[in-house]
Length: 138
Image 1 (cartoon, rainbow, N blue to C red):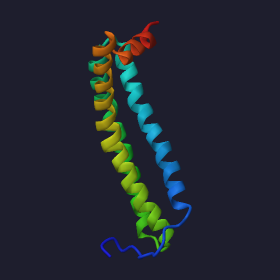
Image 2: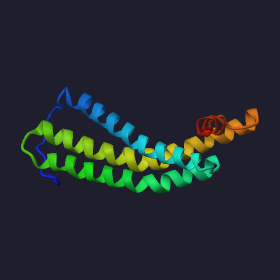
Image 3: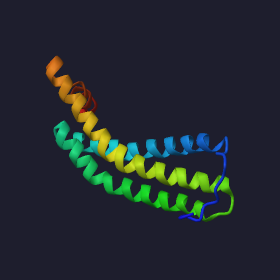
């Protein structure tokens, strides 16, 4: 095959569970980096949209570097001889890349902004903005 992976007729029963746990942990870690950057920008007095932009601009490169380095490590599992480790390597490498690049850096900011705008139209002020204001008050 293209990657030199053994063709297995089955997926190991434990592989999806391990992938889920590892990817959940890494996703939470990446989100903590990003949310901390936004919180710090809000504490500096920036409005919510500018704080989101500033936080992602400062923490984004850290998350991208961490995700790509983990994807390379997991990709190394593919070169092993055990089919189970090859499956795990491919799943984790693809999963961590998709999570960091698409979910954390694209979908989360867009959905957060959309929900905040919807809240501003419906109840006269975004609930996310108000919550961030409460958190940044000393």
